[in-house]
Amino acid sequence: MVKLTGTLALLAAMAGAGLSGQQPAATGAAGAGGLPEPMNWTTAQDHQDMLRQLGIKALRPGPSGNENAPNHANYDEAAANPFPRLPEVLTLADGRRVASQEMWWKQRRPEIVEEFEREVVGRIPRTVPQVTWMVTNTVEATVAGRPVTGKQLVGRVDNSSYPLITVEIQATLVTPANARGPVPVMMMFGGRGLPGTPGAAPPAGRAGFAPPPGSDPPATEQLIADGWGYATVNPASIQADNGAGLTRGIIGLVNKGQPRKPDDWGSLRAWAWGASRVLDYLQTDKAVDAKHVGIEGVSRYGKAALVTMAFDTRFAVVLVGSSGEGGAKLHRRNFGEAVENLTGAGEYHWMAGNFIKYGASEAVFGSKNAGDIPVDAHQLIALCAPRLTFISYGVPEKGDARWLDQQGSFMAAVAAGPVFRLLGAKDLGTSDDYNKEKMPPVNVGLLDGQLAWRQHDGGHTDGPNWKYFIPWANKFFKRTGDAAARQ
Image (cartoon, rainbow, N blue to C red; front, side):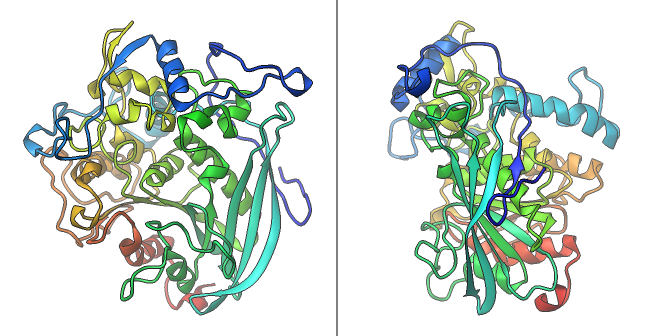
């Protein structure tokens, strides 16, 4: 359903899984209209409240990224696979083997989605309010020597149920000005202004940041030069990247400023929800080929990009950059960052509260570890099938640290392969033995299928892989010939 506000706006509702009936532990003081004020907790207080809700008395500390620390992370492959058998991706909960595409879509995929929502990334509540999109500014500019039209977008979330919290999703859309028809668009996580305006460049380390002399052009220029458009979404305008912000942002708005329940969504799922709302707008813009919209992110936003693609099947392609633990890396791997890092106070907000259980050393339920998680990263990748899924990493020597576990992410991609094949797509072209398959050499891409892998020789960025990603996507989108003639 589309609603016009000013020049253009979209009214969209997000349907998700329901909330549990458990009530939060505390409420804030009464504010305007008798509504409780948002809880003003620190991250430590919010984290402790979730431990209380879960009945956890103690957590195992996560390993240190400092290799000189006594509790440094493991980097010995001989000790990296304490749980060598991954959860079955094509076996139903009742033990039956998935033998058809119909069984995947109607039975197995919903089982995997349920377990991820309940235990890992959290549920999007049914009560998430509608978003009204407005174009607040339009500019004519030049990118990569080509004329473009840039639009500043604001998605205002209906806060009539709780006016004490305001959420306005900040996004942009830039498309070739002389295109002959709708163009494919890559949406990128990260704040970025309109071309030719202050703030047009993204933060350092992000795709599209001005590279050193002699390196590849920014992703934005490569996309425009090839006849694509690009969009951006500012995650901070959706949900804060810390535990103290969980009683604000979109999560806090839905919860009326009160703490989360254990299966409530975390920041990764909230950012993904916001990207989906931007896609709602893009589907109304005549400059955009809405069937060929992709999502991209690096590091924590690489995690968010993978989550977005997995849960919203409208996205046609994803570029997952250096995502590590909570992204493409297997939880069950003991290499670099571990589950315990995600359950501690520094990163727990990315996940559902229930995920903290898997870092518990002492609790009412005993203890749990990574081997108890009912799903793993290979199944998150499998939820993207058969759509185009490109897993990207750099090298430790240039700053894409071993902490990210490139090999563990490759193993996850290998283990997702059977689902891509079941759905008529091509996988990496390896065997299915994820415990034996090793990454190809640096700068050797596995790009023949809808599931792709490439480790470049740069650092913590996906910048060096864009010149491979774009033609790879073009091949499957059946875009050929000169960029100008395609549109």
